[in-house]
Amino acid sequence: MKAVYISKPGGPEVLEVRDVDPPVPGQGEVLIAVVAAGLNRADVQQRRGFYPAPPGASEIPGLEVSGRIVGFGPGVTKPFSVGDKVVALLAGGGYAQQVAVPAEQVLRIPDGVDVVTAASLPEVAATVYSNLFMTAQLQEGETVLIHGATGGIGTMAIQMAKAFGAKVATTAGSAEKVGTAKAFLGADIAIDYTEEDFPESLRRQNGGKGADVILDVVGAKYLQQNVDALADYGRLIVIGLQGGSKGELDLGQLLKKRAALVATALRPRPVAEKGAILDAVRQAVWPLISSGQIRPLVAKTFPLDQVQAAHQYFDSGEHVGKILLVT
Image (tube, rainbow, N blue to C red; front, side, top):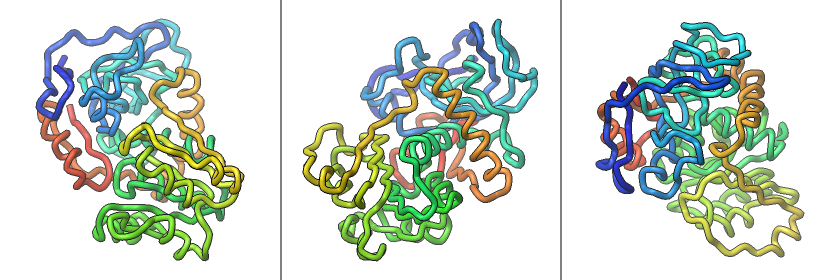
């Protein structure tokens, strides 16, 4: 089969398509013929040498796929059949024509979603739902601030938070993206962070109140501003480090606000935790996708052998929604 490998840390040019033996499903694993794989920031960080695969995971990048079941390892108890159209959440291995994955990390595709588009769903749906609702306990009527409005996480988080009755504020890096966040994604407040101080702008547009929950993909660069933007009893959830991993934190501000800071990552979690998250997504989020209340957004698709071009497009920051590799 064909699969993508990272020859050395660097830019998109270090990605190589190689012919390799297909995986053999192990105990409790499902073998999937991949139709499409989603690009994620984690793939880019792995390509750059900053985010290696967890111990025991495939060195092939790719954290989510859609496809069809073509085989089983011993001990699979989930009620799947050969030919089922599914999505899977991975610790690695998605940029390939086949992947073996624990059955707990596999879901049938939601009704009404085609098999290619479905590849845009598992990583972002699991990340957003687990952080906003299982960790931060976002409630109806609360204000959530979501950074990165038009990326894969942002487009899903805005729609999901709105669907569950939250007031949604978001940041974006241009007037065009601000307009997209409000008109197309449904954000109540959208802030151009290149033109405005986002904590001040948020309070001005939100009746003087900060955010009850902040979903942050930036990290150190936004740490102090995020704490400033929190409301009393606010919860800051850090899920990415695009702006660095080390920053100064005024603990006094957290104390005064009785606020909390939580940092989470989905990729290194045990199989059982990922399975519990996906089961919750199936119950809470899949019906909203099937009904059209949440729409998967695909910016562009690329053939697997054009993976370098796909990463170049991702690095440009021009996309709205997910970028997919089609096998």
